[in-house]
Length: 543
Image (cartoon, rainbow, N blue to C red):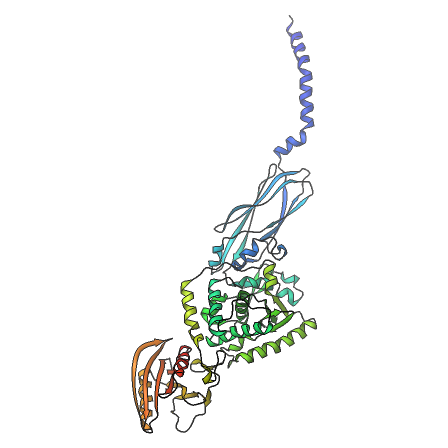
């Protein structure tokens, strides 16, 4: 057979098959090319200016405050002419959150965009963080036919006490409300479930409110009495108001007021608080008692109260006094001041002044601004026991005192004394180092404040007191007990005068940088034994 004819015959036999294959290749040209040339996606990211650990439950809840507080929001757009298939967006924060899928998109068509919101689940141990650090958020996008995308951004993770009052960009701030855009998030610092706050509330109920039930009903006078009980507790424990304000901070395009806010448990055990911290403490205790607490914001200040039966109440929590504040208000004065401020507050609100704002604590909590989890702490419980010892006052009716009748003395020393006792004027016979004498109406008992400038030892002061009594025909005997209370050395003694009057007394004295200060509590040896418990309570309140 001719070889050329054989080759021609073979070519003719395979020609139809080659044409079929070529046609198939032309038909599937686009998909096959797509497997070789991946789809390109574009992405734009907006993220929080910083992470506040106290808000970790808010960040994880897409329904909290209408989903406003996601870690980041990303717009993913397919600008190619082919579909992107099986798109998976994931993120990671090293040392905090492992790689986690945020959203899976089965198909993203040409020209189509998808919005991805990331709500991260931080471990609750994040609230143990006390300092600020810069961390990295890594984002990865993968898919069946797309080029992998890796993006990252830096973010501050602050300490659990840090709070930013707004996340609104500076160029979008229009009103005072924008400056306090994060106000609802303050309820993340309201901790009615904190075991330490529950324990402190129990002490107030047992010792100041004399065994009231844990929950306050719908009687407004009960609510007022409970709120006043909180004030009295802070007054008696010598808690002081500190007036430190927040500081401006710049984070990316955000300018915000940054404040370190102590937790309610830290306010109680540290015995000091800013106006917002005192307000959060009140809100925590009142929420634990079943009340509906509110916080009032006015320019430069905040104060607590509650809402009941459609009526609002308030108290001036900073009336306890403090550095640069002067004296303190008693309970009635603090309540009157709060209600007076409340009238001004609602007048300003009615006039449209948006600097005056009200935080309804329960409403914010119901919207997802819930507090962090806090663990019990035996050391802090012991601190509560020490602080609330002064609550043990139980004056008999014969003395004309009750559990809510205290005044606070603040000068070289501070202590609480019954509000029916009367400060006595100095006389020509008064010892030069005696700063103040406050006596019971019957003059059967008293407390004396001493200041010995230039002295270095409490024993020197006791010897001077003894010598002064002897100069007025008195005989004094005393014993150094070897005990100390809040840094004061204790001395027990008795002084007898030639006219037969005799006093039992206890002095508490301590050395300072400029001398020796302290008090002596005294009662006639013939006085009713009930005065002994009163004098002991005064000593316990000494700071």
